[in-house]
Image (tube, rainbow, N blue to C red):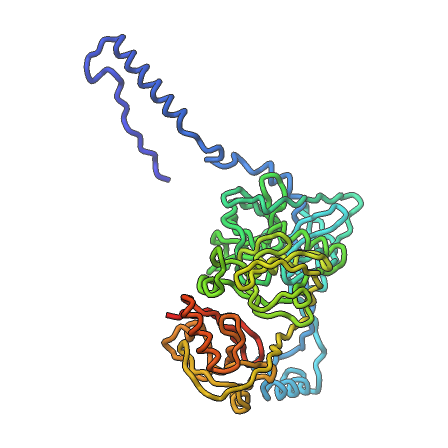
Amino acid sequence: MHPVARTPEAPFGRAKAQPRSRARSLMAAILVGTSVMTAALPVPAFAKGPASLADLAEQVTDAVVNISASTTVEARGGRAMPQVPPGTPFEDLFEEFFNRRGGRGGGDGDMPRQQRKSNSLGSGFIIDAAGLVVTNNHVIGDANDIQVILHDGTKLKAEIVGKDSKIDLAVLRVKPPADHPLKAVPFGNSDKMRPGDWVIAIGNPFGLGGSVSAGIVSARGRNIESGPYDNYIQTDAAINKGNSGGPLFNMDGEVIGINTAILSPTGGSVGIGFAVPSDTAKPVIDQLRDYGEVRRGWLGVRIQNVDDATAEALNLKGGARGALVAGVDEKGPAKTAGIEVGDVILKFNGAPVKASGDLPRIVASTPVGQKVDVVVMRKGEEVTKPVTLGRLEDSDKPQFANLRQPEPESATRQALGLNLSGMTDDLRKKYAIKDTVKGVVVTRVDPNSTAADKRIQPGEVIVEVGQEAVNSPADVTKRIDALKKDGRKSVLLLVASATGDVRFVALGLD
């Protein structure tokens, strides 16, 4: 710790002899000026932070619990079977050999199966004094024995009420002891939290038991690509292994986040932790408590982000924003409502869609069966489409078949760094293109072109150019020429894979 250097003080009036009255007048003037200057400079109210967090920690600690989850698996005695790549002939060979030999490579037959336990430790918190506990789904996994350990060491057996892998949440139920009432903590409004607001995290890092760490909200709306609904709060409060499932509190003792992940090259905290916001978690927790499952709204579209080039190609006023519809499920609500491929969704149920990642979160949190207005940009004009939401099923795998029936043309042309050919039976066979995919086949990509940078590949099919269907290479070049005459600087292609999945690609026309 470095000492603070101080500058020597020189008494006023010592440098030159001054009359006492004049010296006093000069001192008074200086003091008055100093006080005026000090009053003019505002002092931040929280420049030094809270004096102590002890009262807050004491207020909520009893509601924070440790989670011990055990998974029992069967293991054979003796030597373990060698690990071989799955699906290879050796897998069956070794399996048969070790089953016959009892895992020893020799012996009198099968060895008795043994039980082996896999344990994990995490954190959680009580949201209802009747015995409801929230934690992360990954803390309990497929455990068949879960214990909730209270702050005073009391152990309670827990059962799973429901869990959701997409948001990584689970709700457990314990039976409160007759002589030990449980303490619950309320949820707060995570949308009110701002970067710089103080927070504390309480959990069970590295299995050490209840620990408190403090920090601030570093950022909001973080997407760490862990799932379809990423919208994390980032904090620099120390979060380590074992903190998963624990609460992140605001200064009012309300849970505004559920600690879930860290970004770390070492496995320990480096000041980058992530928590599921309470406003995202609470609707999921309510459904898990009420139904034992999550019932999410479903629109039935496949979307992609709108970048600057795509916005220019679509003549999208206001710049890059919204979610570009790249596919519409034939049996989905969007199809019934008249939403089309190429539409840009700007608003959903009154909420603005700033980027494509916003839409899945908004739709999923909207009740199934609710009728909502969806505002789309279509060919430069805003159109409102009323949609009645369906229910998202995890098993749904929408097929985005293209039903156009163009007349194929075999002539080959070049455009935008691409060699293009009409669809033929030979090209379908060569690139394994499905019969439902119609359009113009890419047969070669100039490696120095923008098309190569955008990862267009031979065997892909151009379905639309500038939101108009193309059936032949001539259609492609004709449409490009028309866009150039209109002064457009880029063109939007709808490109299909051999299996029928489509995406939009914007290419420059320079």
